[in-house]
Image (cartoon, rainbow, N blue to C red; front, side, top):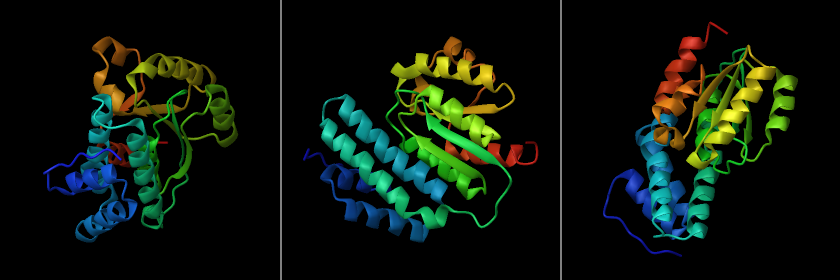
Length: 220
């Protein structure tokens, strides 16, 4: 296991150290202790999990940790998110559906899982397809469930061209369905690249997503 320790004593910093240790039990304890003090899942995702995982990704990009440690850290976070499912499911239900998926060839699904959870907390029927789904299969599923929205994640800039092709194909088949896009890679897009996304709504963070869901709640 890679041995890097941080003096950052925030919850995100403590979680990062335990992720690098591969200590799932300690990571879970840190998360549940945070939620005792602040029961907001959205705050947990934005202020703790995302920060820790982004640092893991940066360490891997700088070759300071192995790909195995990066994968293990991601798996631990996904496991902890699954532990929180009972807190995520909303008692209120709206007649709204969203299909949530990664760009074709994109293998990082934690961010889009967070998006799916926010929709769940707001009472939407959420179809989380995760990573690795071909566009052709996504189109079949959209036709099957007829959602109000489609949410797509782009975590790696390298997959930008795949995103553009996917958007074009979806719009050709389902021009009436609104598309929202999120993901770490969007921060690296140029102005022209952002304009090429057309009328897709870009989500900078989960707080924006929550406001957006409330705004569109009565309009779809």
